Amino acid sequence: MSGRRIGIVGGGPAGLMAAEVLSARGHAVTVLEAMPTIGRKFLLAGKSGLNITHSEPYARFVNRFGAANERLRATLDGFTPNDLRAWAEGLGTKTFVGTSGRVFPEVMKASPLLRAWRARLEGQGVDIRVRHRWTGFAEGGLGIETPEGETVMGFDAVLLALGGASWPRLGSDGAWVEWLAEKGVGIAPLRPANCGFDVDWSPVLIEKFAGAAVKGVTAQSAAGTVPGEFVISKTGIEGSLVYAHAAVLRDALEVAGSAALVVDLAPGRSAKRLAADFARQGGKASFSTRLRKGAGLDGVKAALLRECIADVTGLSPEALAAAVKALPIRLVRPRPIAEAISSAGGIRFEALGEDYGLKALPGVFAAGEMIDWEAPTGGYLLTACFATGRAAAAGIDRRLSNKM
Image (cartoon, rainbow, N blue to C red; front, side, top):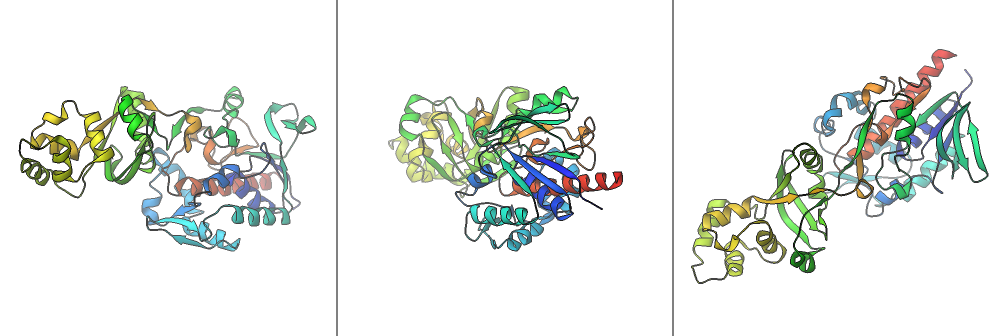
């Protein structure tokens, strides 16, 4: 069987993984990337240590994708976190498990892995064309803007792997939504995921504590209770502990118009113990002294109590202890999608076949973050992008083989 011509739009993890699978099966693969280099968001993620996947038990891992858990299960079964680690090692990148269970390359960077991957792809005959931006469907194929001008490129099959709409300066701008919707493809609105939130801070808190980290706390929402830390920003809150709750908080704001992240400022002490310790301070102690001696709280944690609880200085020991153990930080809105780590929404699963082909556009497939699923940070996002890229490639290969 001679290979067929396949165009892959998007040079991120999903698209490149599909290119690897399809070129290994003898197809002529062209990757079209709008930016000057491939894998830009992948490289940015690796600047502070590339969190490539997670080591938690697989039965727990596959249930981190919310409403998409069932739909993604077979896809993830086909390329598990262990498979991903073995794949990276095959490219010369050994990995290790961090204290949080997250998996990183030993070199803690994305660039060596991406260089080795590109060399493998080019060795398999993949034609990577940067500065080639898809501009929509055209008669005879895809409209492509190139450094030499506009052109139309035709393929036997096309895989769209364009990402969502977070970090648009790195290439994922969501422009594809309109083009697919016009063709009858069901699209769920793109929304920020793993994002920060705006809070109506007072000018005093912003002036004194913008940029301060709130460490050694737990936060509670409908997503559960999670330990960690977050940062006070000029506009609100952000950081890994906030991202762990971002999906349910965003949804609550959309549905009910209000939401709060409930923070335990002293997770190592019970409310009963805190109340007793506060009571021992006596009536003459200042509020700052009561917090410091009774709960070990000062600085930004003490400021948050003053900010979020009305008349907090006059509370009884029991009421103050309750506030320390369950401090509600009331949110106004998510930060804009352009600032989010990832995005929710995209091509609805009902618009896709089991092989990731678009039902409304025969011969066109999709993979990665442009599909309607989301996951927390911790390596889940990347793993699912790799896995959907492989699954879509297998779908393309089967579809084309049946046509031969």
